[in-house]
Image 1: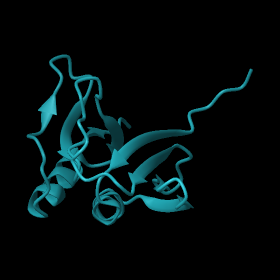
Image 2: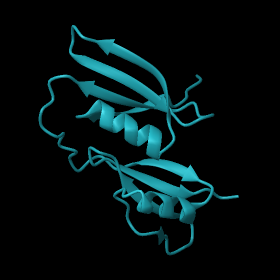
Image 3: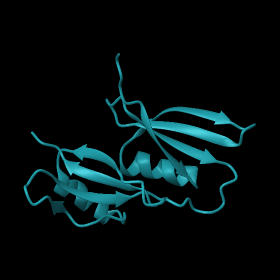
Length: 128
């Protein structure tokens, strides 16, 4: 039986602010948008250029309070070719980023950035 990853969903309070972050900061492109006014929600699917796995932003019209992210959510991970330059770029643009970190065994170098709703995105150095 064939299987493949389709998307990850996060709920967002301010769709415009979230779209600006995922498009302008992380370089994602809008793949499609589905609006359900009768049910009071919009789904926007984003992907990195050349990538098939999508991020679904769910915007519920009536959400007034920030979402409780809970303690079960971990993070989304994105690989980049130059971790130090990406970290510098995000830091200089005023994004909420952590320090560069490396696992003790050298298996990965990374940092985290937060989106407007507080979701963590791990930025990892791609291996050659």
